[in-house]
Length: 128
Image 1 (tube, rainbow, N blue to C red):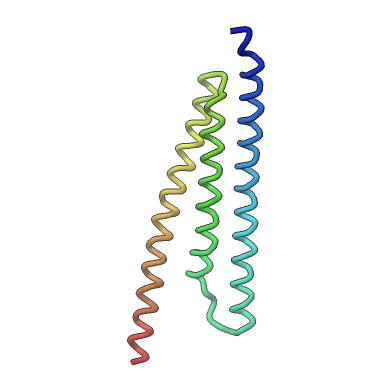
Image 2: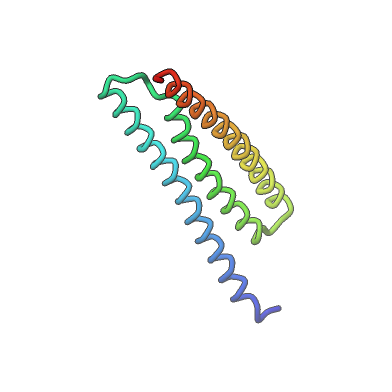
């Protein structure tokens, strides 16, 4: 097994680099989501429209769901090189929490989208 040590070290370095890239992408998703959501809010404020709360939630929630996916991917990568069961248990707990957060966030986004579609249908029928 002595001959495999350089490969093992390379794998650790690669996984840490890739995990860092995924976590960085996750942070950028949150930042882009914030910027995008603020643009929508400012545009509606300038037009003096009603505050588009549902649209803002859908927009930012979509970005958060994407960020959670990248975080979960990083967690999965880190489990491949976890040296101990304690560290593996911590990573598993984090992954489970992020998975549940993502699941419920997606459910909420789905409900909000359906609600927004019903409102659009109602307003188009009211115009007739």
